[in-house]
Image (cartoon, rainbow, N blue to C red; front, side, top):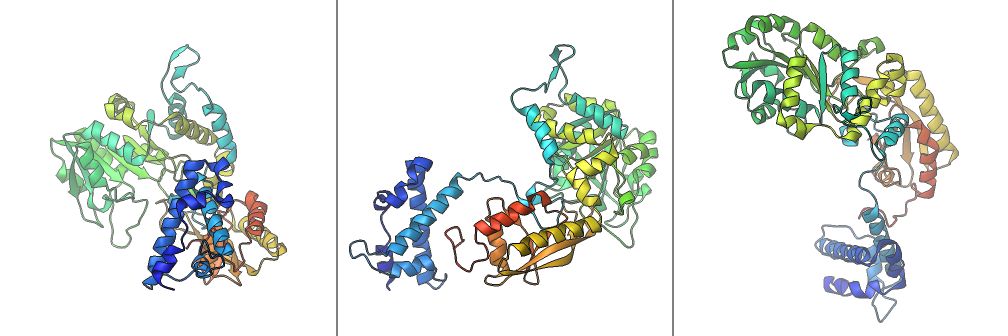
Length: 495
């Protein structure tokens, strides 16, 4: 068929809007929204015809139906009209569906940056919802009946846990470092090892943050070796701070030498220069007790001599996105007085989540159970294998057209934390019979509660370490309702 004939058989927008199939959507979605969906779907169809005519796209079911003419007046088959109506309905559902939705993580990456890093438990979320629904005493002292300090309770808990004199929280750790440098070093210089000029993600680099703060960068040492003498030689009367940056998202090994905060402490005493340490991941407990590699924690950094430390709230801490600054009160108070602090401060929702998570750390044993990130990091192999076996049984009982098997694998920490660490885990491997692993993976992402997996050897893997087992039965139910293992393409399928 000639391309122009294909175009001729595409119905007009106004004609489609008068059909019963399309009019049924108007009460639920509104006329304007339905009209926009019709226009968008027809535009996509025209583009698809153009690509197919040029050999750049494969023919699909809808294009096949255009070729079938069983209605002399419209030039369209009944199946074409039904399929087009279904696709418009699918588009409307996507348009009205929230873009931000719950995801079931089967990838095995615990702190998955694309999934919001640290997951928040249901119990914590429920407590936060109760707090932030309506009004809350964000900046109100209930005892004195007057304005209070925002996040005062957060500061109290942080000081109690870390031993810091004072603490504040801002939007994220990049904001924390920006505030520190702007407050302590604007117009002066900050000394940093060349081996610690990290990129923190999204093309944001330590030198860029420093430039934005108004502080000058003084690089010392080499990529792999920086000595105490390198720092001291670089000190001048314009030096405002020495910055240590923990390389939490990569490791340099081999012929290396690093100068610790403890070794730098005499320079602070000698020259009156504050020592700042960016810990990045921000652990509040000793992970080596649970078989994980050592990661510097906040308490140790302060005890070793750091005047100020900053770290993320949504990594190893297991909380919401936030940047936490803790250390000496004289410096923290200067940061509170900086106009930039108001621009970077956290809102009531972040404050409520952060406080809820920090309260769990008053009992480290409780934190390991009730903070999902810590629970997944420290979960033993036997428990993971039991969860995987349970999920395997549920999938086998559903008799899907696929091979189901247990699949030993390795989980990752993710989120720029513990970069070389892999954790032994167990996944359920699904090998579909009628569709490819890639198609199955795509269809899983289109479920009402999307399930994101990884593919190995044509097996779609659901890693039991990160998969929320309370949703196992719901997962199987969604698979049944969506007929997800069918070889038939549905209206929701990508073209």
